[in-house]
Length: 135
Image (tube, rainbow, N blue to C red; front, side):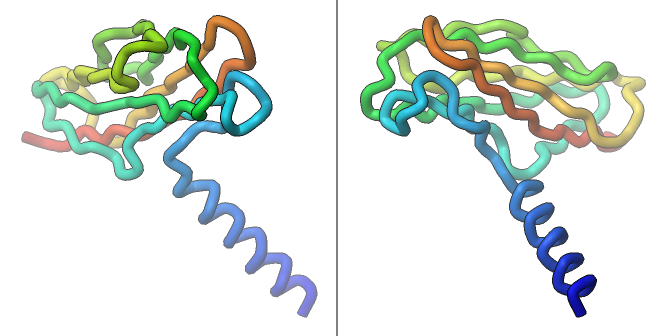
């Protein structure tokens, strides 16, 4: 019985963590002094040889008023533009990423890693999946 409960609890934790669409908090330790990176919750589908725009945004705490440098690293097989961006404290918190799948890209899922580093405070990162499909 204990084994069954342990398995169910492990699967529940894995399901909750697998659905996470925001990064852990970066910046300051207090909730109002930090930020999170918001990425798509479901894998955008991109046809081979096409480009799709995907939004990545910052969710700032009420007291978080710093610039954040974003570094984007795609898996091999897709390309992303821009690979770096700075979200100024006074700017809108959205960055539009242009994701391109080559005409001969292998079908399947690719990961895109996004790291946010504030002027001061702790960095944070998150990843999302992009699915390349046939045209």
